[in-house]
Amino acid sequence: MLLFTEAVASYKEVPMEYSLVIHIAGCPNACENCQSPWLQAEEGDVLQECFEKLLHLYHTVTCVCFLGESRDEANQVEFVAMCRYARALGLKTCLYSGRAGEPEPWMRCFDFVKRGPYIAAQGPLTSPSTNQRFYKKENDSFVDVTSIFWQ
Ligand code: SF4
Image (cartoon, rainbow, N blue to C red; front, side, top):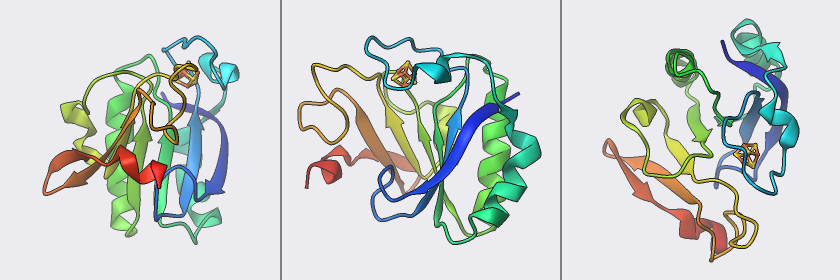
């Protein structure tokens, strides 16, 4: 069951989109120099119970961005269902995943996927030396468009 700690509207996470950014609790990554250590605890509100209300409250957004994953792989089913719901409303979707590697097959429900842990010495997505990668889905494949954040 996905839990979240807060939801805010932001232009920062997904270029060219105004996103409802939902902070997912229970991050499994334990990055050194974690910027949001409170997200490592399994504590928060049940997202499924609030998702529809959040979309109603933030009705001017163009995208829903889930900031973080959780330890439980069963939660992938919830992500897929929420992506479907958001898409039916004409919204794009994004996942910020702290794990390294290219987007996994189940992540094809998202229009954008960020991958990679935070490594302070390499900097965040906005740094050209970053280890993190930002992918955009084009023709059902994910394309690395990280350099958008450096312009
Ligand atoms: S992915 Fe983000 S929240 Fe999770 S440990 Fe790393 S910096 Fe912290």
